[in-house]
Length: 577
Image 1 (cartoon, rainbow, N blue to C red):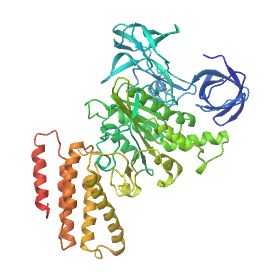
Image 2 (cartoon, one colour):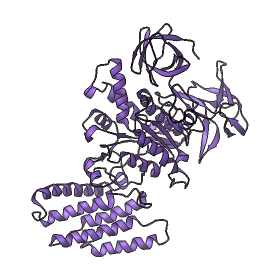
Image 3 (cartoon, helix red, strand yellow):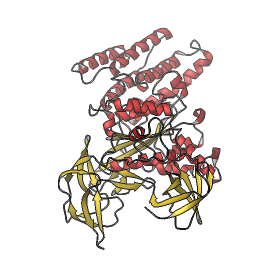
Image 4 (cartoon, rainbow, N blue to C red):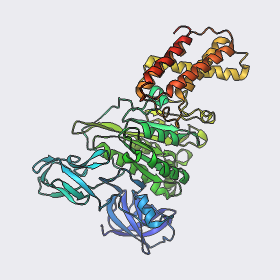
């Protein structure tokens, strides 16, 4: 612990101005001494012999002249075995243990170790004495749930080191020495299972960052087929309150083809966070048959918690995701909601007295948003493996206005925009992803020409729908009415999905390709109906056939028979199929 100390000379909400004599680091962690309490804070600006610090707790009782102890260390997280299945706050305090110690109301100034110091892990060595190692190289492994958790050389190592000793196979605590290494200058370093890394610095230890190319199968048809997300890419889900952002993210987390899921509930309402904590641990993992929580980590920071910790929670989550990427795993980070993170930045900027940008957000909002999403990516590790961090952020624009600064700053840097519509959610068309406003820069599972044709049907159908509101159904010509029915048919049988149905909640790649090809036959068929009522009944019958198809269980022996029977019924009804 550093011996540097300072005195508080100003207090503005959770912003402290501290006068000091020794040097201070940007993003350095400090502690304010208030009676018997030590309250954590972070340096966010240095001016001469004064530093502005944001405190991660309530500032009640803090006054001029109180002592601040500087640690000499930047805001960091603990990385090691035991992260999976954990629930943390924005500063990586384990909330379950905090609850056991504090009861219903968390005590101010109580900080616990993120990882269990007493639990033993079965260590198996990989490296041997005499091997040359660098930052991020694998020393050994321990089993963690369904994964092999690699014990890596600290990411802070610089240059090449030589292993002097490596622990033999056996059970060890995370603080036990697993290896000892020495560099050319004779400096020695002890390696344990646990290491720390500053949250606002990306973990850099990989050979190269490559362009994302493979689609990330989420099980949601409107995403995988129409607006695909790449593995290692970025996407955002803006939408008004109640449009289904959180439910969509939970569905993606359960069915997406990734290894590790990190949920960052950043500034969410306490009721929603409680719902996550109650339901998420009981969700079944369709990939393993175990609990989804076995390969998940939750970072919670409710809107009632201190605003400074909300700003830190995003960085804590992405650093943990990068850590598992270094093991060769594909990780998915879902942040809900980045708007409230941006609000925390706005509050901090206001207290610093900075010149405000649009809607009082700081002028550097766009660069902060870009820096966060740029930590996603597909990388090639030095072992030759490819691993990734995929980042999806929910945005909560006031009134569903996508022109507001946070949404616009996000759209400039993400590769996929899944815009949620109040109109669709009110009509109970879920997921409420608007097919006319959304877009993606990534390649998906559908043929480009087929996809463009299907989109053109949706666009033309929307135009006819608007016209019908004016002239009515009777004033619409038959050709336009058929286009309208086709667009509604595509919407109902493909874009909409029942999250609460055991089968339709997730649609695999093969099922999506099969169903979409049959849908295209309907869209391209030349219907010669003469009356609107029979045409409408016909499309209703087709719709029911496709819904039945979506609900067939693929793991049943009779799946192929049932699928073929429905396909034949569809072809019988098509005029020129």
